[in-house]
Image (cartoon, rainbow, N blue to C red; front, side, top):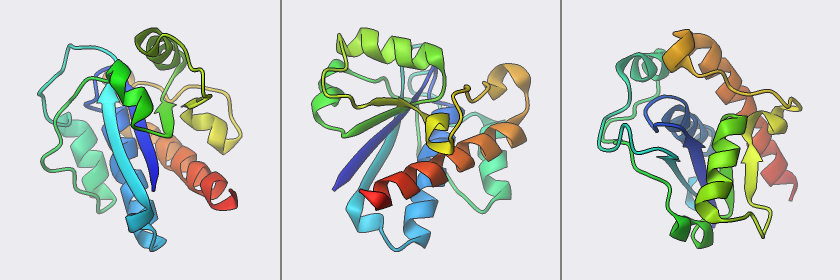
Length: 151
């Protein structure tokens, strides 16, 4: 079982989008039983809130539902439970390392590195550009799945 935790600031836009995009990709590849995929926040600001409506709408445009998802916080204890922690931006990486204390096993990555890019997935909470965020997240998730398939 490959255990992946997608992480962003509030767990209401980018990381849940990544969670559900990745779930769709592994399902389409017939690999759902080999993956455990979740998402969480580095902050406490949105805990308990559902996926932000514009993010939910963007997922729906692509035939992806996210009903029942509510923001949860990343915990230090999660480090032992997951194989990969995939952040959306540099601040997420910094905050994950703060929560974990360190990344002693090399489990923390930025999503777009799997797309051959070092940039951040811009936060649609601020940019209001959920379409671009979706495209970047999908590209990163496809790269991540391809990378895992090669291992």
